[in-house]
Amino acid sequence: MSFGIDDLPVRDELRGKSPYGAPQLDVPVRLNTNENPYPLPEPLVERIAERVREAARNLNRYPDRDAVELRTRLAQYLTDTSGHAVGLANVWAANGSNEVIQQLLQTFGGPGRTAIGFEPSYSMHGLIARGTGTGWISGPRREDFTIDLAAAERAIAEHRPDVVFITTPNNPTGTAVPAETVLALYEAAQRAKPSMVVVDEAYIEFSHGESLLPLLEGRPNLVVSRTMSKAFGAAGLRLGYLAAHPAVVDAVQLVRLPYHLSAVTQATALAALEHTDTLLKYVEQLKSERDRLVRELLAIGYEVTASDANFVQFGRFEDAHTVWRQILDRGVLVRDNGVPGWLRVTAGTPEENDAFLDAVRDVKKEQR
Ligand code: PMP
Image (cartoon, rainbow, N blue to C red; front, side):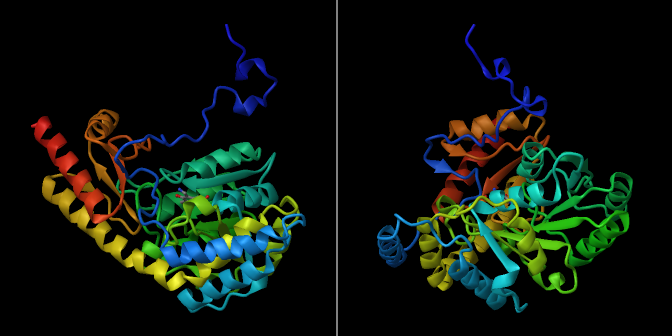
């Protein structure tokens, strides 16, 4: 018998658990992790090289611990796109929004505290809760994957969580959460105990609706988290950020590792932000491809969940995993998020989406 994890003195709550593991398979068409299919444009690649070359000259020194230039530019981007004034003091950045969420849970969750999410939703909220010793509560959703406000309010009143996650648009379902629902949940959370409400807007740029950033006004316990991994097409960069009351930004300083954001990361993100307009042009194209996927999937005879993101949840299947495999056999990797009866496909380039649609048409034929 070989020595394994269970032979180590790992924490009890980690025993028998699996790590986050979207398969990274080498197949022709990869539509499984909600990445942007378009590589960065060449002028931006050049600009990144330039900025990184400059940063490299100073790599003997630690980077700007407070990432002031980068946070200022991110604040500008948020202000420009939401019409809600956001400043340096409102913004914090980290290595992907996963790290932002981790820092929030380290600050506001932790042993003896709990966090709630309305599932199915982004599985990392629960996994990061576990990793930070925060108890996880799985809140309900309706059959159609919208949030049942009354049921959600009851869950908050019953469990009195310290952190409430609201993902809009939601992953893996694509479902947007109306502002009124977020407001009502914020109120419910404050009635139960003063708790933090984290609105995860990783996919907001793809939404038919508006960002909830304006709700930050007068709500110091509200946080909006964002990422450059999706709309900016920079998943490999690892840059996530949040907007909130300056006190929240001060609070996460208590747990962030010193110099967590490397000089190379900061330089690369700054270069990407200089090209915001070009990068966001792809968003429009992806939105129309997403809508095309919805139309075509319906035409083929599948069910889909209304999507505000760069992906579409489709079904229903008696055995989603078998269908996932049949699509993979045709060279297309989609995602089985473990939602019974459903799979998720990320909007790719028109050619990739055609390949996916051909594959699912073929699978459907075989099922007849
Ligand atoms: N939030 C949601 C809802 C996501 O789907 C993802 C990535 N799949 C993230 C956060 C994390 O993204 P990143 O760490 O790349 O910013």
